Length: 65
Image (tube, rainbow, N blue to C red; front, side, top):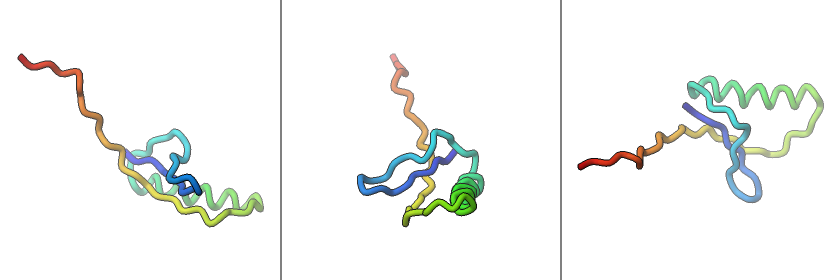
């Protein structure tokens, strides 16, 4: 699973709430965002995107005796 982040003046921030099943799907989502903004005539700032792999959470509720 992957998610997208965008670089801002304040650091890296998550772009949308979705997780994507593969690196290819996440990359296509970034491309679709850029294409859609371009077609609408919106100015795209010099944004930098990155795709981050979701880290699995540790199960901290496991008790062993």
